[in-house]
Image 1 (tube, rainbow, N blue to C red):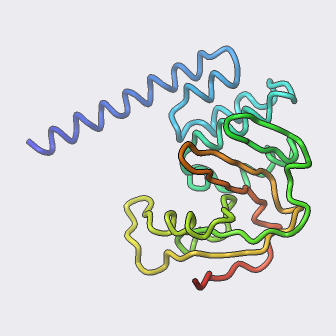
Image 2: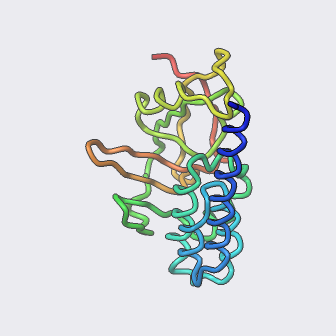
Image 3: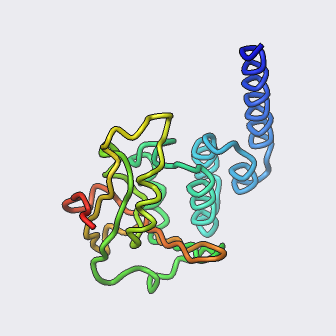
Length: 192
């Protein structure tokens, strides 16, 4: 009986995914398409709409896909995201408003933290708050249990490595920076 229930749940899940794919395919704009897509399809639809999107709308489309992808570093390797970020230049998301003002970009190197498995230390998403990195360190992905390799890592990111700044939250402010991992210097384990 349990197997039957699991099979039904699986079929329902994939039916919902297909429904969202169809909505994304029929959308009239890139923004509508990316918003309609299932979280792991958002990068695909970003790519499908990129060349058809006005340059002024590309930062919004890009951040919609990034944030909506839940775990964008796992959906696509960072090397696939980089051309999009490099084309739009520095971008920030400040409580739902997309800005492309360079004054939002750090002018000095900034100490950043990332909580993750050791295999994912060189990725795009970082935070200036080690306590927030700890929350990510304690999460497991893809049903992989923490084998002791989940740590908090730190790096000193130069301004030219910073691609985006994201500030969100309701009861608290969460800050994140998206970086070009290829431009990061040494990444080391953070010791509290």
